[in-house]
Length: 162
Image 1 (cartoon, rainbow, N blue to C red):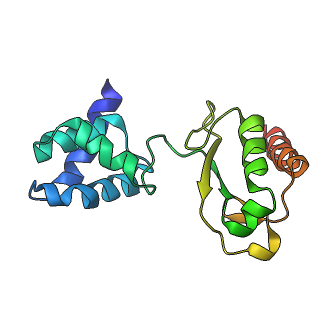
Image 2 (image 1 turned 135 degrees about the vertical axis):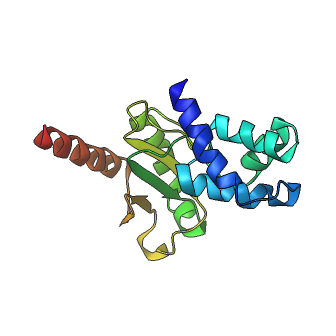
Image 3 (image 1 turned 60 degrees about the vertical axis):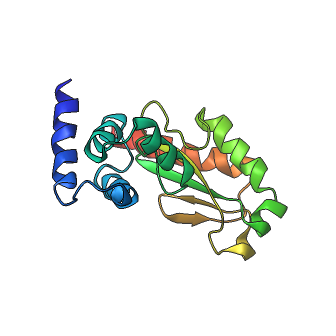
């Protein structure tokens, strides 16, 4: 509960720069996301109260637009490209590999908060398809075996630091 109160305080700071008009909903949500890395449930409830609209309206907007996250991002964000070239070269299979290996679905974060998984429309590295972006590093010609190798390298690095 203390965490919720701290969160509400930060939400209040964001809301202080707005007049409480419904047209401000998307800019408010964008600023909340920039502040927290995602849209916490408590923040969306506070935004709804501030704008005098139902919480379901805030949630509808947050889930309609791809730019908004409802879960905290992982320490290591993973983005899987599903643009045309990546799709043709097996991008869906690579996405399924990430989901299987991480035990999460698109839009989710692993329980240990280490990894989050997203699908993106295009990374712009079509010649390297299929592509995944891991910690902002482009990984080209990804295969299910490479997915396992990338995750193994994180595990080994973590063990080395312990």
